[in-house]
Amino acid sequence: MNAVARQRVCVLGATGSIGLSTLDVIARHPDRYEVFALTAASRVEELAELCRRFAPRFAAMPDAARARQLRELLAGSRTEVLDGKAALVELAGHPEVDSVMAAIVGAAGLEPCLAAARAGKRLLLANKEALVVGGALFMDAVRAGGATLLPIDSEHSAIFQCLPEDRSTWRQRIDHIVLTASGGPFRDRDPATLAGVTPDEACAHPNWVMGRKISVDSATMMNKALEVIEARWLFDLAPEQIRVVIHPQSIIHSMVVCRDQSVLAQLGTPDMRVPIAYGLAWPERIESGASTLDFLQLRGLSFEEADARRFPGLQLAWAALRGPEGSTAVLNAANEVAVEAFLDGRIGFDRIHALNQATIEALQPGAGATASVAALLALDAEARRVAGEQLRRFQR
Ligand code: NAD
Ligand code: MG
Image (tube, rainbow, N blue to C red; front, side, top):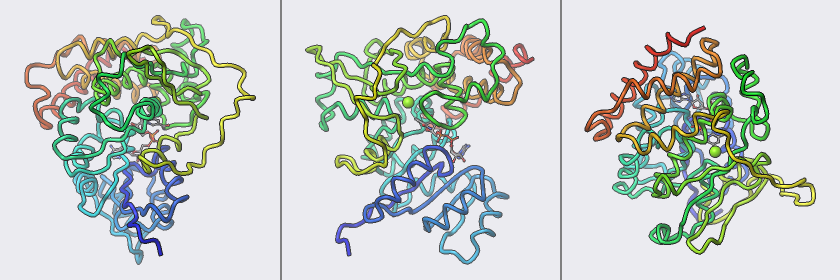
């Protein structure tokens, strides 16, 4: 018998790319982790299969009909099935949960993330959109709740791994950070041909296998834009302290440039199980399942500037950070609408940026737009409405 209590983990977005990688790491360490709850929005059969394998105390789906189906599939098992958005919030803040893996995609993850933050959980944050929307309010909830916020995004995990545990030293120590970007599948493609690319082409990432939304974001580099905003909050940086460089091999996951110009980098094979394992075990290290980086197989590490003509969306990050409070939430909402429209075949790939730009221009958040969760959710809804209106101009 292990005398040490196992960490009880709630995985939000269990059927997704990050959710499954998290369960892969957890399965390697049955002595350390116990799955307490699993949630997903779709893929009922897959969620049922995960419940049979990990025997969580709870499972939840926002949609009542899907939850009913899951309940039928799991009849006679120990897993209790909950439904509705409120169930995700309840499980993220459940008193018996130690750690929450936030792996929902999009602003839909904001409320469960806030619940985990307020309840003082170890919050493993993959769901970057929640922080991009929540901003200062999110960070305030983390502080007020006494939560431990652990970045899962590989770049932010890299920065976090390069910094000392004592957060109070960060400001003094950091000159700036450099987020690396692979450049996605269209790094070398003639920008004039981008209008015609298909969703499958946009989702064929050279180095990472991910959900479709973040794959499209990587192709437009809006993913990096969201990560710039994410870094601003996670590490309390000014916009000008965040730089981006294209590094096609995805071996250096990001870097901290210290005041004395010493550069600290974190390297490894591109495998999300590394940052996930670090988040689960921090401040310890556990086996992640990732393969060892073979330096002799590397044909070189290269770096290039992100071309603003090819990736016009990247600059929107700094513009939104310098704009009125709430601008980042508007940008995120516009982008969620644009990516969905692209994946559904309603707009061309090159119109994603046009729609984001048009939405930002059409909607300036007013005073108090980020003052409360209700205000933020209203701003998010308004931005989606405005983006939907703008969408008509760009539809095929
Ligand atoms: P995914 O699409 O593979 O999975 C998303 C999960 O969230 C699924 O389980 C889905 O059922 C659930 N979900 C979707 N919409 C929901 C809603 N409205 N309410 C509740 N649950 C919902 O996505 P992913 O690639 O695993 O990415 C998840 C998050 O992690 C994203 O924010 C992404 O930016 C971030 N992230 C992913 C990677 C990666 O390698 N995949 C890397 C870094 C960061
Ligand atoms: Mg990333």
